[in-house]
Image 1 (tube, one colour):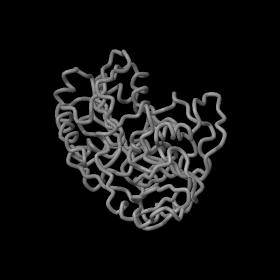
Image 2 (cartoon, rainbow, N blue to C red):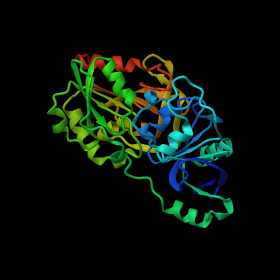
Image 3 (cartoon, one colour):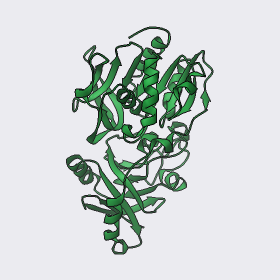
Image 4 (cartoon, rainbow, N blue to C red):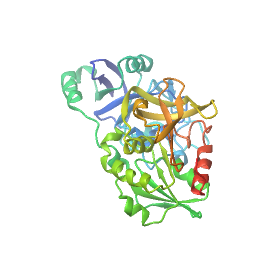
Length: 361
């Protein structure tokens, strides 16, 4: 079928549908990764979003279920220049088109993704809609404009927090993982470091978590505006006050900052890709990282008596990490567990193990 993408500023892009072709509203963002699309598709942090890939050909190595970050794709739509007709990979379980169809995710190909990305960079992330018909002239563009204007992306975290109660690994160290939309590789990384990991729902009470008697707490990644997670923020105030060893990634990083009275704001077009450079301010060393976020902690609101900035983005100078003065809590905006992407910062899990062992940073 023919497909039409419309942005809230009125810009339109005509292409061809693939996957499960049904009309969809979404927040349109772009990702600059050249590979790792199976991990991207199954990353819960993309809930509610239509993802535009800047790399021109997607799907050439198919989908391997073992690489998935969750049991299903969470994004609302997938927008690419071209979908490969051949999935050439000895590990391939299913081709991209069939995978999206099976999971009811609509796709759009054949559009100028570079032009679309340029609009998003200049005008910022926008709401959008994809509509399908046998002929483009059969698509009601006026109705699309009205639906886009009324659309709001809200309450994403409760939708993706699905692993509460699940236990992984059998290590001697117990880590309570707050599931705001956790990626599987965070769990794999903890298990590989000798941890038993128990997942708790995003809004679990601090007292409920501590009944399990964890040695420490991991705050996961997740989608949406962190300020919507008021219940989680209130509980994290208790976590910090109790001096529990804590490691936070992405949304978890933002939530802990909000719990300490810092502020967050929405980036113009976010950081999404696997080649984002960040600087470690303690060593001046630069690492290449995988990132997927639209919000950041506001540097002007960070109380130096509570936390110090540990990492910054080399692209725009925004905060990429915080180290709290209690010495038992630290957080990063990027993904040290990255797959697929660089593993330059996987050492942060070693750092967490030291904190769990009693060391203060």
